[in-house]
Structures are given as structure tokens and as C-alpha cells.
Image 1 (cartoon, rainbow, N blue to C red):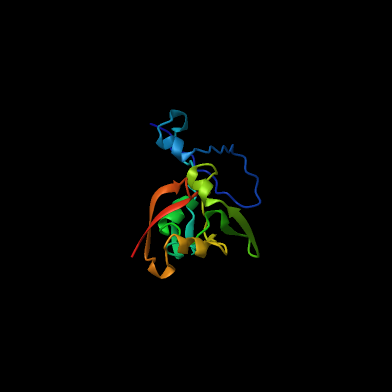
Image 2: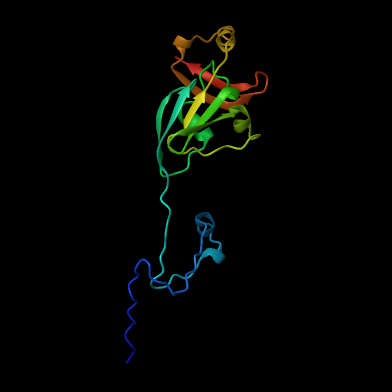
Length: 179
């Protein structure tokens, strides 16, 4: 007849813990790819901790097709994906004048100037957005005049659809304006 399992004493704060504790971190993408070194044996009384995904909102503003609040629903969103979700840039946007504002702690913000043009071309690394990030796409004093020369009026812009990411002749994001 097998012996009954031995009951473990409950843990009390302040008492000395004598058991051997081993922490094994398993990268989920590698496990999903089938890399066998991460397919570990799980035994009774093992504790598995899965970090909760970041949930919240990020904000798109300035010269994007549709400014507003967007959801982070437990998956990682890159800056490039966020711009595409906001229906790309409007005709007076200057991709080089994009700021990502990230809250650090309760009373600090960090402003980072990024170049969307280089990110879309793959020359600069894309970044992941976090809850409460603000993406502000800027312009400059000459952009409205350049848009007017190209025949685009701000009141005619309803939808900006992305074409090929960049037109080398203009060095700008290509957009087809429909009314």
C-alpha cells in the first residue's frame, strides 16, 4: 500500500523558509515556436506566473488622419501600427517632427522626438507604445504652403489612405486624398 502524501507546513511571514526555490523563466515566443529546451516538466506544487499584458489607452494627436484615443488591449502596438490605425498622416504633417510623450512615474514625462519617415523605411527602430503614451505628429510653417502648391485643401481632406510608404522624389509619406 502506497504511503499517503506528506502535508507541507503552511508558510508564515517571518519564519525561515528551508525549501529549495528555483525560478525558471520561459520565453513564450520560443515555446510557441516549439523550441524543446523550453518545454519543461511541470510538477505538483509548481507555481506558474504569467505576467499580465499591458492594458490601457494611447493617444494620437496632431497631424494624423484620425486623432483620438486608441486601446491597448493586451497586445503590443508599435508606433508604426498606431500611425496606420490613425489613417496615416494628413497632408501638412512633417514625419520628422513626431514626438512620443511617455509618463515616467506620477510626476514626470519624457519627450522623445522620432522620425516616422526613417521608421517606415526601416532605417530606425520602431518602438512599442505603453499605456498613456501620447503621439503628437507636428508640422512646420511651410507645410500648408507646400500642400497648397500640391493642390490639397485642408477642408477637402476626409480620408487619407496609405499608398507605398514613401515617394523618393518628395521624400514624404505618400497619401491619396479622397473626398
